[in-house]
Amino acid sequence: MQERALTGNIITEEQVFFGTLTFADKRISRMERQGEARADANWITPGFIDVHTHGIGPYGADCGEGALGMATFAPPTGLTGVCPTLSSDVPEKMVAFGRDVHELMKSPNPATTKILGIHYEGPFIDYDHRGGMAEALVRGADVEEAKRLLAAADGAIKLMTLSPELPGVEAIISMMVQAGVTVSMGHTGCSNDQKNAAVAVGVTQVCHLFDTFDGRIVYHGVSKPCLADVVLIDDRLQKEIICDGIHVPQELITLAHRAAGARHLIAITDSLAGAGLPTGATFPMEDGRQMFMSDVARLVDDPECIVGSCLTMDKVFKNLLTRFGFTPVEAAMMTATNPAKSCHEGHVRGSLKVGYLADIAVISPEFEVQETISEGNTIYAK
Ligand SMILES: [Zn+2]
View (cartoon, rainbow, N blue to C red):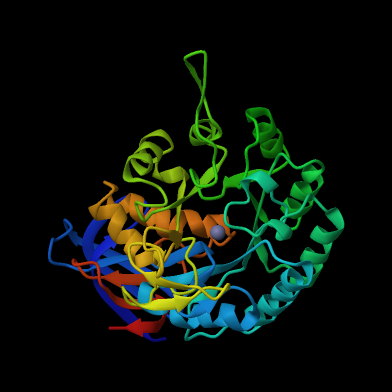
């Protein structure tokens, strides 16, 4: 049995300390504390898991090949687990994606980031809150279509985002939850009652909190709580949050930190294909226009125009610690532990614990990824 030991600032669910973590075969076998965390030591943190990403590097989550490309490109970002995310699309494409990713998951490539399952962001989305989704691609709740998606993916769907206000959507929520899918509410303008009804039938997550959410209503000078407000204080819901400081401004990240707490937050990138390419690199959009990678992805012809996120999880980890005031324990919770639970992997990964899979990101004090380890295999080394 081959053993390997890593020394550095080990981040567990409870604390961070300087010490040695040993793993053998695929699993963490020992953790020894040698003292307080040191400023000059690497972070040894659970490998990052992104449950909401549409693309990494030049690859997009639009077909099996794209999902595999994402998993192949991702290791230098510290990512050990990913749920390629397909937003509302034509039924045939969504079904084919499910079938293809299911095939990929049957024979995982040990040299890449692990594909943990599919996230469908749609297609059952409220028209008025579709955000960047194409008008023709969002549709009402269709139980038959939901059945076809479940059948094609055969267990590979781990998350589905839908709008709770769609008539008949409760049947889909129940069916998905029964099939082991985490159902996330998003792209929605639902009322508090509709939110509670959705939670009652099994919704446990919120899709990119604050983005595609309506603002607060002021009625005769009195502020009514908006959906983001009631969601923030509802501990039954885990909240995805894009941590680039632009899709969600820093003040709202702080609000979420204080109101919901890191235990109820799932850091996501919501990245597009092109994410992870060097700053300034251009990349073609589906409609032929060019975007370039900056703090966010922006239009070449109109740099003021934000097209989407080009965040990667190593940047998220850095942002949480250096810009947004989270502790290392909270950052690991948001980048690994909570996302692992969201895709039903929390019993085996997402945390540095003896017996858990050795999914590890080694990050320098300057926040550069030094090594990414997936189930004991080095999938990236600087
Ligand atoms: Zn998305």
